[in-house]
Length: 317
Image (cartoon, rainbow, N blue to C red; front, side):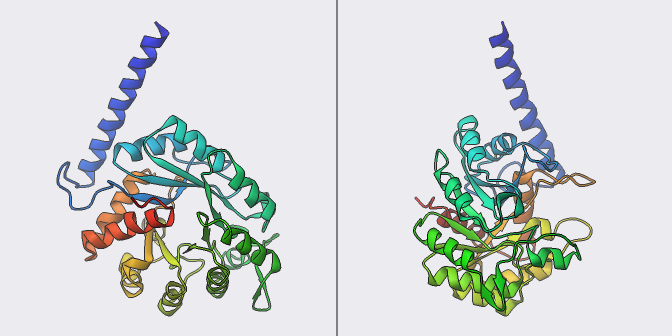
């Protein structure tokens, strides 16, 4: 009897999820069939989900189920304080049919620029721990921007990257499936990191939220990073809500001047707000639709939301 009830309960939850999704699409003004942009094959490169020590809008397996139902190809799970490689492994078991990857952010709780922590992430069962972020919340630039005090994780001194950062890049260069994200460091530091990582053989490099309030690159700086082999990430969270970090028109202009071939999209969603934002899959679809209203073609949006991130993660057919 309990097995029958469990199956029935699962079906009910699935029906409720689809009903909720239909209501969302209707409220968003998205036609149920034939919309110009869609999530089939899309990848969200920055997903904040539970379980986490910070409050999150949904657990990782629930985000994966909704993303799979909407046709998404992959998610990258992110946590400011610990590796998500094990979580990615478990979510893949619970929700087969969508690729899930993990990473590590080199903030104070993992020891800062800690190569041993990175090595352990790559050794986690499944091999899904691929992404290494330089510090974000604990970076000197983050604390300086928000006028915060407390310990930080420096990555450079006197205009040069620290030896531990260079050692990290050398390790990543030996593992061609790994991805470097620059974190919330200063734009000058991000350019140094991109250049040095590329020179040392790191294959996949992303400037995190390049036009957000922390790294806050200029157009020439973004173009320089792209010439050095980096992709520029544009996160929906930076233009979402009543007080965005940047107006969407400024964001769109930056994408055009860098070129969609050098850009990827992410949501950076997961933190609850009032009113609560949509979950990651719906948010990514919203972002794609917003960019279409800014004049980007479906092909350009698909390049940024599907083709480029798939190439970075080694998911090309």
